[in-house]
Length: 66
Image (cartoon, rainbow, N blue to C red; front, side, top):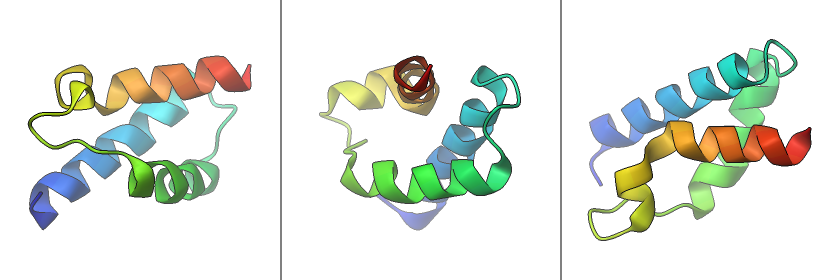
């Protein structure tokens, strides 16, 4: 995955974490979560996550945290 796409997915994921948590997750916490989760996540074209996207993953993480 190229750097531009990777950064775009990361930024989208961080924004989604903050939005879906209704302000309970700060930008600093969202960055920390992104560093941990996206390092282990495969968004390549053949991955199921490539079709669901970073917002779906963010919703799942917020749901688990609640």
